[in-house]
Length: 397
Image (cartoon, rainbow, N blue to C red; front, side):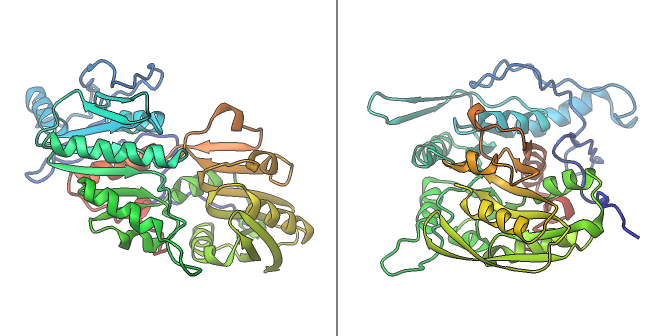
């Protein structure tokens, strides 16, 4: 008998709900309590007004803690944690800071007439754990340089630790030499981030796991797949109707881990031959998709050439519906026309890269990874392990 895919108890709906985690008091860990978060407040890039914390009343406060001790504990811990945003994805940074119950740090970023980047922190970070949220998405060079200057500003302001939070790591596709006389730009960018003064990197869904080894500093690698998996589970698709599809041979490990979480769904692989960058030609399909709901899984969609040709092949082979699931929506032209052409029942992405209004189309669903990144930031700051289910590597690395 067909069963419905059920949300995993270790896989909370991170894309919509704030964590209600309450940590017991101890000598080695600070107490974190739910904080009010008004997402409707207008976003201000300079961090807005510092309104402090609004504690919830009621049974959420342990009786053994007096109000003064509780407020002192929260203030002592959170004043050592600073979240700053670059200009690449300020909306995501605002969501992360809201999840943590903090105001974004005040920072001034501007361009000179010749394009040079100027950064000035407008509050003290001396002795603080600083997290800089800045994906190196298009324009990649501008956003990367801005991140480097932000790191340098924090280093010169005597921050205790500096963590570069890079939801999308540009240049990650240039992670090896496939032909003679090629550069390995991923290693070069890793060196730049390290030498600028970063103590740690928090990245989401790197193009390949080997990129972590390019950094000479610790890398916390989290995946956006739990957010997508939870959303798919909420749709109530029968497990007997599912098949997970890898759009290329290189993504088989990712698709296999994804399929395992979806009631151990069967796996299919699209075999293709690539003749050049952003040019793909589908050749064959390994696996059975006839009458199935096919879920294509990839880490990013750039021009959508690979995934759209794969979807066309799946329909030819008898797939009933095709879903596209990806963490990073780069969406370079002509991606939107390909994705909205009717090949996909739904295109599911996350907000690691900001999406302009012109790139929205009816089949598009955008999920937030703010809670996932926010929880990881807290664990890094609080010296807790991030290697538990919702924030694990899903067995991919």
